Image (tube, rainbow, N blue to C red; front, side, top):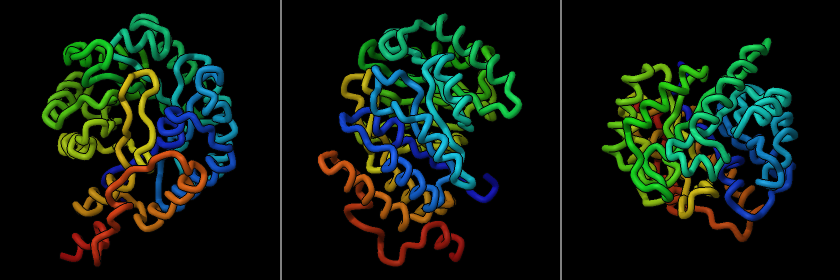
Length: 313
């Protein structure tokens, strides 16, 4: 990442599509992924290896992974809920696999049907499998509901820290913080990032997954970046959320995030004009699905050139 400052990781093909009823055809997913890669995206979470009966929207993930692997320079990421999902992800050739670890145990039981101790054992088994691979994928764990839970309410920050430590001990390469329910605020984000950094090391927490449910997504992203976070997840058009957390709609809008970062002089490597045109793929394929974003509606400011403008001043 020496040529960029912030990695914007697109999660729409996974987190976005899993939360809507429509099932996007595989060829449309592939076109979407290729278009965003051509716009400069280095990492895209292309799907999840969840049983089709649970999320039929993700039934073609193996095929989507194989197609995405043909895109030069793209880091192909997927979500897995358990060891079987990890086996399928490795078989398909994914570069990065992420497992959600809900700090709210009630949410964990609803989301993956496992409590904390069961999940730690699952992580250990996946880590062992990853270690056996000749070209192992990057294995990370996302601390879901880290900022609050729609079921339990407040989540203990000490429990978040202990969970991060347990996951690192279980063998993940890094942990990330996820605002699954859209509860976070900027001060909370700063505080929790610092606490987890102190517990596991800054090099072992580089990413956040934030939602814009209550309008604080970009503010929270900026707060995380100010504490040293270098990877931020977002979804094209802001589609998606968590289907197992009531009311937790609203991923950060990729278009708005890229604009904010580039306007601040932070390099993303993304061509924002090309990015805005990718939106047409979703408009055509999902005509009944609302797409969000201020930048797509208002357009770019006259003369906007992103980080290049800052370099010229």
